Structure formats: C-alpha cells, structure tokens
Length: 515
Image (spheres, rainbow, N blue to C red):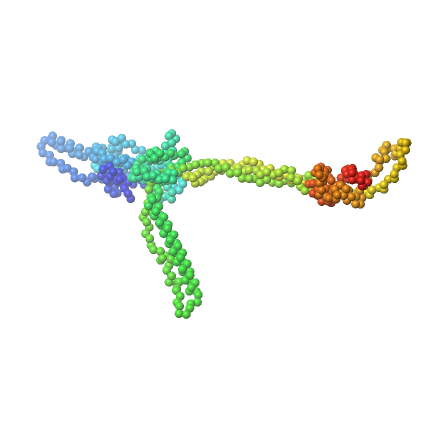
C-alpha cells in the first residue's frame, strides 16, 4: 500500500519515513487511541559528534555539561499537518509539547501519530489529521461520515470496493451559494472537470471545488448536482472497448464452432459411402480450444479524479385525455312507441387533466411525481327519447249515405222549423259523408295525381294527400310526408279525417261529393 505521507515529506525536502513506520490514517479502524504511546520514536541514524575529554576545573565541566544538555534538548523533526509538511527545530520533549509550541489544537476526533503523550526524539515524523464530515454516496444512498483523509482522492480510494457507484457529494452554502465538498480534491495530481458534455483538465487538484468552478467560470444552478468521483481514464475506456470487441469475436467463434460440430454430427448419422470415412464428432476442436488465452489489459480499471456537474431541471408536464360520454335512454309516455327514438341532447366528451412534476438530469428523465389528476371538463351524456305510447287503431269510416232528394223549389215562404226543435238548419244537421270503397284512391288522385312523393311548388304540401308538415307531425308522423310509404300516408289521412272531417281537403272532397 502506498505510504500516504511519503509524498508530503518528499515534497517539503524532509527525510521520507521508512516503510511500516507510519499509520494508514484513512483506515476507518485507526484512531488516535490505537497509537502505541510507549513505542520509541525512530532514530535519525546520523553520526553524532563525539564529546571532547574534560580536564581541569569546574568551569570546564559546567561548559561541557551545558553543551550536552543542549544537544539532547534540541531536535529537528518533520511535522505533517493535513498534508502540509515542514521541517522544524524544537526543544519540546513530547508530541503534545510540540503541538502546543506550534499553536496546533486537536479535537477528540482528530488523529495524531505518534500519540500526544509520546516522547519526542530527533528526526521524528509527527502527523496530524483533522477530522471532518463529508457526504459520501454509495449506490445512490447518501451517508454523512467523519474522515481524517487529506483529500477526496484518498476517501474515494478507501471506499472504492464497498459499492458499485461511489462519489462524494458537494453541499451548497446558504449564504453565498458556494459549493463545498468539505476537503481538498487531490494534492497528488490534476483532476478533470466534466460539465455540459465537455471535459477539462485542471492541472492542480490541491484546491476546493468552489475554486475550480470559479476559475473555469462554471455557474451552478440551484438544483444542479456537484459530485467528485473516480471515472475511467481515456486509456481505460479504450481498453474496455477493445475487450468488449474481443469477447464478441470469441462468442461468434464459439457459435461457429458449435454449428460446425452440429453439422459434423449430422454427417456421421447419414449412411457413409463405400470407402469414405466420416469424421468423428470428437475430432472437432472444442470451442474453448479455438479461443486463445488473452492477458487482461492492466489499464481496464485505471481511474482519475473528476468533478462532475449534473444539470438538473424540474418541470410540470400536463397531459389531457378524453373522457367518453354515456348514452342515456329516456322514455316518453306521450310519444308513440312505433316512432324512431330521437336525440334531445348531443353527447360531448369530457377531459381528464393529469399533471406530473418531471425531474431530468442532463436532459434524461430521472423521475416523475404526480401533482394532480382531476376532471377538468365533465362529459355531457347523450340523451335519447323513446316513446312508450300505444298508437290507437283507426276504425274504417262508415259507408256514405244515399244522396238526399232535391229540395222543392224555393218558395217565398220561410222554411218550417226542424221537427226536433233543436234550432239547427237543415244544412248544419246534414250528416258527414264518410269515405268508403276506393274513396281514398280517388281523393289521392284528386290531390296529387296519385304520386306519394310529390311536393307542391311552394314546398308546403307533401304526398298523396298534400299534408303540411305541421299536420303530419301532429298525427305522429316522422320525417316528411313525401318520404313515407303510401300506406302510412293513407293511414294518417284516415286519422286526420276521423279527427277533423273532410274539410281538410275542401276542393277535392266537394268534387267527390264527400261533403
């Protein structure tokens, strides 16, 4: 495993630590309590200057003693505070003394190695890691964790094998809207910026996300998502494409070998010709033998750190669907049941309006939430009226009476009063002449020439008996009289005569002597 501190020490010009002498502070199991407080600090390995022999009085002894004390108290150590490495000189005797001397305050969640109460030796390495909260998202589930990692690259590396999709989620400050990840990106190298379908390389990753976005003029909307994640390098994508093509070719070769084996099996089953040997199925090369072993490309899993900006939009989508109307049958007791039903109210479709809140990420729909679903326009039912009244039977008219004798010549005398004493004149008391025999055909011949579909020149009278439309409908007729059958016209003409007399046809009834 890579020593997480060696790069910092080398960068500052300090002596790098030896393998096995520092703690992997990104391991969640490592805390400041796990440091061995009694472990001796690493010796510098330098050749110390020898002390000259002391001869003579007390003064020389005191001077020599003072020099030895100074040499034991003075130390040169390497201090790494969150990746900021510096070599310093100190007279502190413990790690805690050094931190106090440098004004470094640590909390209960921070990590110090060696522990704070450990003795401080010359050429020692002291590492301080501040704990901070970050939001890590694993397979779509965000979780807030506390980490002592120095940058995002280190956190993602520690969680790489725990989920298929791991990223760090940046938050937005309420004051100025700046994007905050909680720690630096990467102090070891460049990072990529992926936004709006493009990709830009940021040479130095040792800065905050907000600084990178500001330097590149990237505006982040209120709903946009900012995350930091490991993405495949260009070389890894090319290697993955090559592997996919290779696997497809191998699958095609295996299918071809399987088809050849099946064909060989069919040839063997057929009767062999004399002197001709058939190939054995076992002789066909196995599909796995046809493919050669290929060493996996080591670049397949190469990743690089990237800031990914996802543009998020939320919009309402309204969909209107028709609601079919129903047909309602109403019964009319005043309408003859043999008449065709009539529509009194035309049906009208209604409208159902559904509104969804649709969330899209980089133009692709991610989710939709139902906002409302209601009937915006109610349907209007179609109303059809059907008659239930039985039509009365029209009785035949009685036979006409014999023509009355001619009255005697008028005299100058006034006619005698009627015997009944009713006060009616003879003409008013005369009975109505009833139709008999072929009287209806004669009447039709007189009125219309016997043509049931004829219409008068002014368009007011129709059919055999020259009905007006109003009279026809009052008798229960439907449509136009000239469109009805001759029998229907005769039936309604008889009903009209029974109701109103022969006066409905004044000219022809007089001509025929019917009144």
